[in-house]
Length: 177
Image (cartoon, rainbow, N blue to C red; front, side):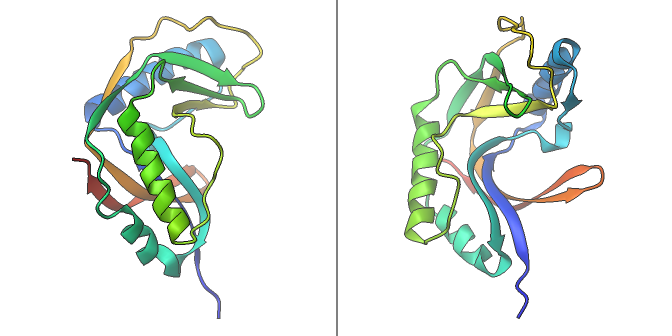
């Protein structure tokens, strides 16, 4: 029997004003670092990356997100950085909201309880704005306007690679308290 595989992750998905601000920041950063901009429709903040999983486990993933008890919060993305090892230019936060860390913790705990493998690296909240960026030059946090992101819900996303880049499909959405 050949079971279909899917590539999935939990994320915060921006509303239109946040997406517009993130795209504008990507444009400014692109002027400094070149590279390939993230398409506006794919901008997000990953919470937990699961990666490849059998499609028949989708009900378990959806169940893992039910009844998450974390209040809504606001994250302030006010720092840029560029990782040389993978040429990713991104936005980060000087201070991570405790509710964001709690959301990640609850999702990871539920995935672990369901024996669903996920990326267990320490959580570093970041929003990828550029790929193949020129990270060779140190730029002291360029003058970008801080972006306030009010988080009111989170999503489960399926990612598939297409010739024009990644195609994301939201498979589920859950409100925060």
